[in-house]
Length: 501
Image (cartoon, rainbow, N blue to C red):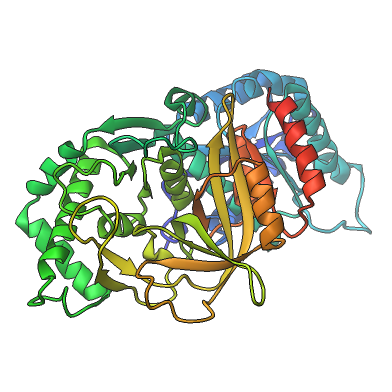
């Protein structure tokens, strides 16, 4: 198996660019080329890096640097650049290229040799292996030009260094996905709700995502016209993948409800494929000719990597798709979520997250169960949904909001736990978690920052990946974690308001 076959995000590349100059002679430059190729090959082979790593050779002058940057900008498969100054690379010759760079950049501060050859080291060795010198020159020009980049320091062969490059490459893949992401809104957002509103032009300008609306009956027409063979295949997949209540099983008295839900899924898939969209929203206030509020369909589409959010919340739907791409190949799930209700005690305070129907089964602790139950809103037939509890473990909960002039991302680190008791009368997917640093501080911080009630919950991604992504997006990230102090958070929010103005 080739390294490309083992990389879950192999459709994306990062280009490895090594800096030097003509000062050191041909022998030294040949050694630089060999070393650069070996480093790039090791990163390409690393299981910690989910994208392809493509060596782009050694650049020694302004024209070569500008050319590789322009090529990277034009290459759809290129998600970003990894740069390394093997020797001293005078940074004025990087200005023309860096001023034109439109892709994310990671500055790898490493050197070819892990250890110093104490007995043999001479000035020839020093001139060849002076990344500590050359990378400082490169760091200066990045700061002088205001280039947004990640800096990773350490030996290129270390797993921890490769892991951080891999995390950044996941964020770069998410950013690349955002640049071509299309979001379909079936109907508008929920009436009178503020946080789901937003400036779609600004979203496309800042984040790259294109958001457009279609009438729900455009979807209903695709549902009605879904080929029977497609419906049969999806139905068979459901019966195979989930535990099914007797009433929904073939021959059961409510089997027709499952068939209707599967037909809605087929219609949504066809509509999204027709429009090249990877994320969508619905709203219970505009269901047109649909027989049910879509529940099962969005759940299964999210499990296949699509973005979704309820009530017309296109920002969360887009964020879910982006984070799904970032998490590609990781075993844990990433899901649409909503902060719903609290357990203040007895015992440790906890938060119960859920939604009416549409939580992604990728986060399930076990085999989900297909059930049908009444729903008090939507004014349609009882909808089918998958019911399960989320798997316990560490996770993050991420929201996005728009504050007029900017987008703010908000992240809470959480610890998911198993429900203390059964929930026999709550027939929805749900997750129970302990917010860091504690429920009260987390909730107060979330409210002070204007956080939304819809979020993206991920047990696959960590905080560092979202820090990397939001820096690529040149957007604000507010982090709520074990070290959060409300007084300091208020100062940070005030400082951010000034900075982002």
